[in-house]
Amino acid sequence: MPTGLLSAITTPLWSFSGKLRALKEPFIAPICPEKEESVADFARRRLGHEIYRYGINPLIGGIYAGEPERLSLRYAFPKLYALEQKYGGILRGSFAIMRAGRKSNVPKAEKQIISFKNGLAELPQLLVAALGEAVHSNVSISSIQKIGVGWRVDWNGKTNIYDEVLLTTPAHALDKLPLDESLQKALQPLLAIDYSPVSVLTVAFKRSDVAHPLDGFGVLVPEYEGRKILGVLFPASLFASRAPAGEVLLTVFVGGERQAGLAVPDTDTLLATVLPELNELFGTTGEPTFSHHRHWPRAIPQYNLGYGKMLAQMDAIEKKFVGLKLAGNYRDGISLSYCIEAAVSKEGHVTA
Ligand SMILES: Cc1cc2nc3c(=O)[nH]c(=O)nc-3n(C[C@H](O)[C@H](O)[C@H](O)COP(=O)(O)OP(=O)(O)OC[C@H]3O[C@@H](n4cnc5c(N)ncnc54)[C@H](O)[C@@H]3O)c2cc1C
Image 1: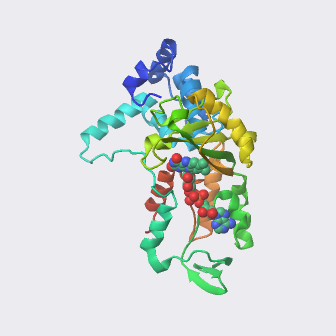
Image 2: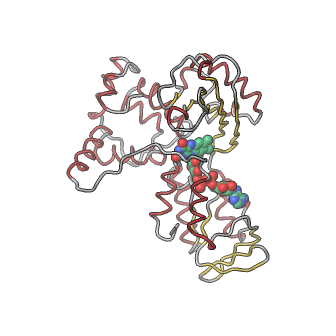
Image 3: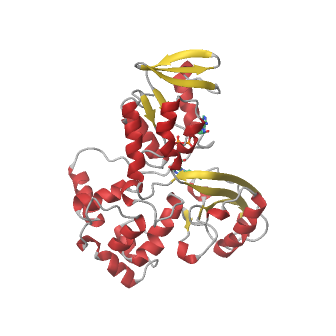
């Protein structure tokens, strides 16, 4: 995938006519802001069928494990939506932002792909260490009730009074919480938020058993190619210490909205689906030296068409139940960085 304008022009990924069509992008008028458009319609309208099919479609499979015909551009990619609405198009907007960035004296933070040596759990563990005794984990909450201006939370047989309550479970778990009836009723519509199912299979091979150099981030699969996987990451090419010397690691994503039925909990079934695909794509031979499978029946919330109603409902609940906050990846964006940004930027949310 090209990562800049020059590589987008020179890449062999798209045909000459596909690139010419994409270059018309700055001259395509924005649609009226009231019309909600799917990501697929937006991409085809502004960039053409080919860039959609071999650019945007596989990206959506990789980011949302979602269905581009149903994902709402406005809510799933608000920055892209704003580029069209504010500047008239993606290219015009990107150049305007670049020019403004050059003029401003604010140092630009360099974007990086980061990971944690011992897994994502390191982040909450560090937060817990920083907050010290204020954190109580592994407690069983029996009741959360609104009382006057505060909240009464009963846990481990004790009653505690708090100014605010922040709910950070996935939306589909909100009905599992011991909340009072009126709040539970208000939260009910959020249970309808779609989550895509994903199976993540991590397999290691001897380096000599993989023909491909694995010189990149990984692979995203366009739906049009009819494969049984969404994509593959090359963790050992991206980060140090991800595989023993002489071995390589492949993280394979299966299912999503595209092929929900393939995201199965059974590892042998998954291996039977995935290994032939890896053989075709990377020339893998022999058996994996290691495999690990994690099945996420409800992995990623889908900001589908009409998602504005869900967000409005969340705002209304917070207004009605003063001191209650809803946070998590179904609110302000699905990436971990958006979750963190939202948590630290909203007054009254996380203060650590
Ligand atoms: C397979 C996969 C790959 C991803 N890859 C990336 C990536 O490369 N980059 C990126 O930025 N993001 C990625 N994401 C997205 C990112 O991981 C999530 O969006 C982010 O972790 C969401 O944070 P959260 O706090 O909203 O939810 P979660 O991290 O899901 O936390 C919700 C918590 O609620 C708890 N919970 C659930 N039910 C209850 C209950 N009844 N009572 C109490 N607690 C409960 C859960 O145990 C969990 O700890 C990926 C997600 C998945 C599924």
